[in-house]
Image 1: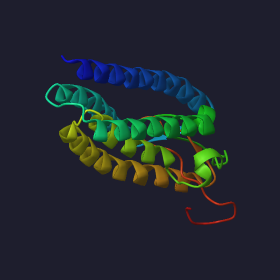
Image 2: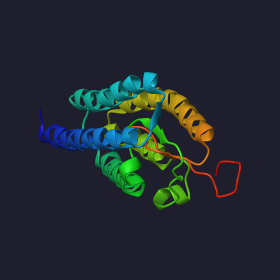
Image 3: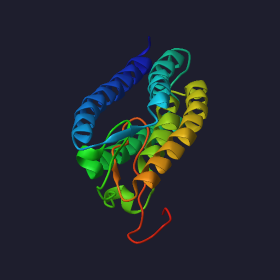
Length: 195
């Protein structure tokens, strides 16, 4: 492997380590949610989301062996990837113990309305989409970017529908969702519609 592929492999390893840290945190937060009466929704599609994210990392790394680093594409895509990570961790910090990689609603808790949730319904999904495009294109792995983005948009359509239904049925509840694919929507106090 050449030097740029080795560096890119290091970037993929960092993102993989970040994912493992997310999963450990999600496991802890899931236990907290369940102790507090949490109800999981959409568990059937979760393995597909996990597989898509493993595919993103593995596919990008494999494809990078046949591509080259193009600075005019790679550096902006690295900035996009870093921004996506910053947004993801802002979501995690904003949700606290309610954050999870799964859709878990704890009945009776108010929806989070701080951080990026003040302006966006599903900010972590924006981070996932940006990362799915940016991370492969750091090393011009456009096939991986295209395949992941297509699969991810299909999965997110299901995920958002499940999450919105879970939040709607729970009334004013919190949700523990972000990580690999989602974040809580929010309602305006006294409002019937989603922002």
